[in-house]
Image 1 (cartoon, one colour):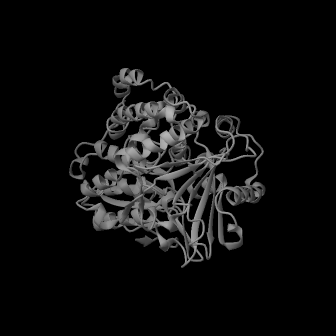
Image 2 (cartoon, rainbow, N blue to C red):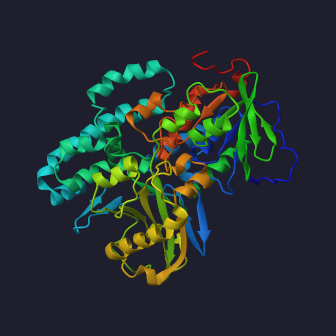
Length: 524
């Protein structure tokens, strides 16, 4: 791993005998892309503006507490295993992945709870305990979820969708599966209990989608959980990123940290490399951007004419919600709160209205729902001896709403409201044990990750912003430019961003053939 020196006058050139690729961003999508390109024989350079690989999956250490900044779970480890196998490596030999049991617990304000597990008998009993009349409907929902998994994940999610004909081919299947219906609407057709409707429909929030408007194709997440389980990487997702870096470096590639891409270079009508923010240039035969798709087109291609992803089009795009995340550490609490596990969801008093505030009106409501991560119950290395590491995540409106929220002023009062909810409903007395504290707001996501409007998950995965409608992995704006990551096909979440690199591998020729048969846009 190389930390770039901003004072260097030139970037060391890779051997010209190899076809060169430059990857912008060392998030999981960018590192997966670099691995796939390395396996195809490219000499790969990854440039990352931050000082650690992993992007939103990186971590920060404060006072002996390791704070995982982004994703905390892996739901489809096979995607990572396939990625490493394509590079001749064994994922399980390099990353210690632990299955979670239970996956998570949902707690409502009335004191009722729902524990999610992989074991179907245990889940059936849990549904029966909460709402006996909904067991049959829940079983139908699982079958519905599997059908959408077969089409949406195994089919569409693993192949390129940059050609309109690919979309047209699947329209009949979309219609048969009622893809026009929302995730929540589908759950409401299968179960009556409002708590179960929440339990079956909240998952799109973890990829940036409004459960009341995101296509019901995304109920496939329920099948992912039951079929593959929910896993935690010891050392956090950062451990996965570092294992990926090792593969890239063993392939002969390199990672330059502290190097921000400012513009995609164009030569002869094709992407020809990257200019860094300090003016230095890295030449390449192809460019892959793991930067947010909005940033890629609005900033990195600002001097190149765009046909589809113009600034006006990007302004009309619906972006995912923002996130308020409070990372905090405690001392002397390891034996406290024995009923609080690794993952807990605290549901606020409203659901539909609260989601509408976040996605539609942009109002910062008085109430909230929280996802609480306590990795120290699984991985003691995240905290000093006897202590705990937490984060509490609250979905909030992104910065594009004209709601008058100034997070510089609002962050501390909002953090206090989060603390009060945790005190009252989950970890009483915790404030007396507080040590470290770190707050991320939508402004942090905007400034740290260059995410348009501080959106937590890039473009919202509505039906008309998915598959062909989403920014393509093969750029429709510039030959030789490819996109990976949450803002492109198939979408956000660890399986999604790893999947973007799998799609990339289907589009990019082997390095030895690249010079003879340059990739062209479908429209050319």
